[in-house]
Amino acid sequence: KKLSDCKPEEVKELIAIGQECFLVQLLQAGFFHSDPHPGNLMRPHDQSRAKLVLIDFGLVARIDRKDQDLMVSSIIHLANKDYAALVDDFIGLQILPPDCNRAKVIPLMDKALSPYVKGGGAKKYEAELRQMYGMDGSTESTIGGFQAMTNDML
Image (cartoon, rainbow, N blue to C red; front, side):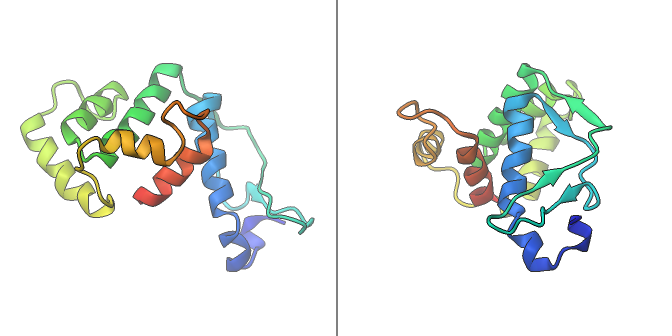
């Protein structure tokens, strides 16, 4: 059953699965489905547990390891409200040009992004995040931790 044909409560059950699915694609697999509209996302008729099926992989983009690392770095810098470092990440990802006016961009990022970031600014916040989501080396990192972290930040 296509998501476009599902009831809102059926779609809501799949949000966390969809987040994790695309985070795995972006941060682990190195590719992502580039056309994820509700007609290309399906919920199987088997209702034993929530599942998400992606179809039509005709439009897929690849992500190299360097860009994956920059994406992870940008999530951490956003969580820390370290907008100067986030500008560097965005330059590395070619979201911003290398010659951007940092003196203007950093305050704009702060103004635009701060209302959407819970917490942040605490000393050793990165270490606290990593520990909270099992990404501090004491346990094996899981993409579920990234999904939970981004969910909490947003």
